[in-house]
Length: 292
Image (cartoon, rainbow, N blue to C red; front, side):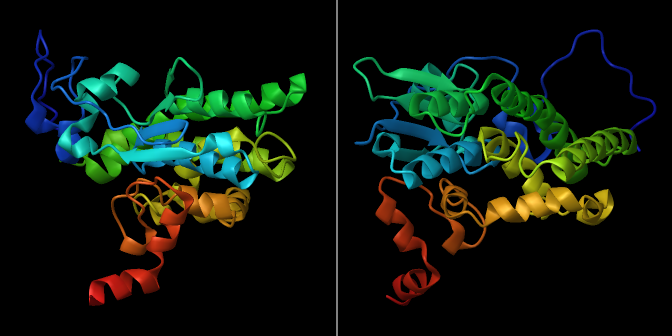
């Protein structure tokens, strides 16, 4: 339980030591804290990101586009270490004034286009290449509705439940109960939709699935934090079916590796600058490199 004697002060002050494991990645002001010029590679798309759920959305989309033969979707993926404060460098803030990953610089035309917020990046790429976003009005509306649903629900799942259940320096029963209730409601929303439809937008795989899968697929599979038993995720059978189905896609397997900086080394591709980079991540090659 929380301290029942706590009374909010008249004026809040920032105590960065009180934020738990991820205290260093947020602050109550905007703008850069240091000068840092971002690297630029050879490809049309320059992605500055990290292999979190929001980052995975975009790398999956880019890999899916490349799998369809869209060479204009070739990209360099640069690792942004949020624990070290890379997101507060001047170059990153120029692309995303909100200092959150991912951030995309589309250099395919004479004037580079900055795109920030993962949902905006998915829409930008879908419209640019004419893929994974229906053009028929009703289907497009359904797809975009589920995409925006994810953008609105993620703070409850990650910043809410995930923070208080797994990462907060103290366990607060009220906070965990509040967010667990909301996460289970969201899982029920998904499960009911996926009982009537193969994918979130309908019969076809779209950017809505790419946005939701890294969050809720990771949750039901215990990838981010072990909360499956606590939330009884096994009861959401349609979500699990959908999660497993998407996980088998080759582009998804590649996309989830990019900018990944933790876990099994064979699952990590910290930076991606060429399709051949994935070949270096196979376990046999890692073992051979380690052996000298």
